[in-house]
Length: 205
Figure 1 (tube, rainbow, N blue to C red):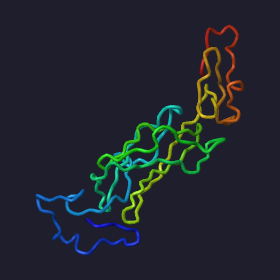
Figure 2 (figure 1 turned 90 degrees about the vertical axis):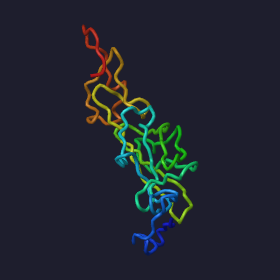
Figure 3 (figure 1 turned 180 degrees about the vertical axis):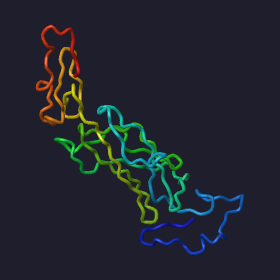
Figure 4 (figure 1 turned 135 degrees about the vertical axis):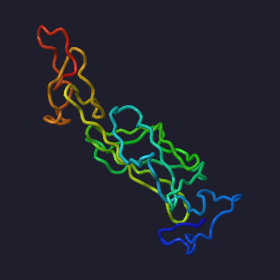
């Protein structure tokens, strides 16, 4: 085990020489042969740092964060400490967006699962997050950016409470293209019209 520091980027000499191998009865805290403390974060299996939000008022789709060391190995020994999601400056229509729910979770053998996070922005906008872990080990605090992309409204919808697109209610409809009027013009009273005369029913578009 050696402590990585951005102030000293090179590993101690000789580690890769093939002479430093643990015996079968002895293992490192993590890593088969040698390892460092956690210095980077991996998002999910495919390391995806962008999530699409289609249901504005529900929980953010669950995602995992894995703590990795200098060699890219999972830091399985890390448990009980916290990893946190916070908002970065973001333009969310008339606000900056915000988080609710569980924005702080606990590592469990080097893996943190965000499955109770709520995040609010506006249709067609992006909320930027910072996922961080204050390790206090070797002057390295792993952190990475994540973006939440909120789907735009589609024809037949209106903007509800500046946070979500809702379908025009039964008895009303809209053929207005949202990109033609923007969110400011997408109020229910402005785009959702009553059924045409003699129509049996209407809704959405």
